Length: 330
Image (cartoon, rainbow, N blue to C red):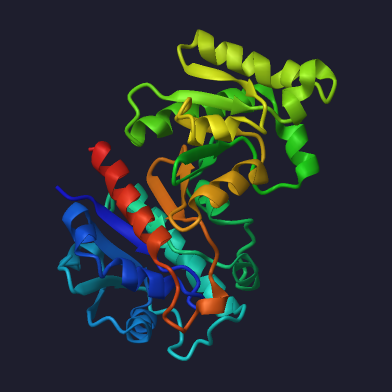
């Protein structure tokens, strides 16, 4: 009954393949799930040599052929990369392949062949050079699954945040803070927190402006958009507080334990405190998709690619969380 977790290999010029090998050297992973890497077997063999971990890389043509035995890494082999691909360089071939790994993962998840997707990092510049023009993983997954209402959630250390807006300019983010969107993200926050194990999640909604607007002195988005969303969410039965001034809400959530999840208004409002408090084990979860997707919360780590020194903790945490969330969904 262990869920099957499809692990997409990410950009092969970065450290993604290496951290996957390291993560799958943990027998505990196999105790909670059945992992299969969606990637290129040749690149995974190279990664195993680099990190000096003795394991078999076992290419398979379909998920049904995987054996999920500790000590052997099953790789759904896409055979789409050259063996001599350079490290730490933006390469359109790697970007194209990284997109194809994700697309295959979505196909398998939508078809019920895997229970969740855990993604290693891709490089946006390389992906664009390879012909696929997306801001990042989240938008790829939403587009391929035809999902309209989705949000990025980050969890790590003592903090969990979920975003109203993500990969847009700060100027545009302010314009996108609307009652309907804030209300929808509150709903998504409640569902996601339940999947994390909270029976009745306590949700905080951060303000957009300093001091949450100070009654309109520093901006009126709280009055016009955020407060109406919070009030309607309360009427719908959600345990929600806000808007809470953004300079105190993370202290109250992470250290005082007043809240289980914080709805944040823009990318850096959530990413900065999360990475300060839980960088090594931070996990990115796309909420609202018709399947479970977790990811490392860092980039391709070009500086350590090919050296075997990249930290696998975020990758490990992403796999464990995917297994937990998929298990609760059964």
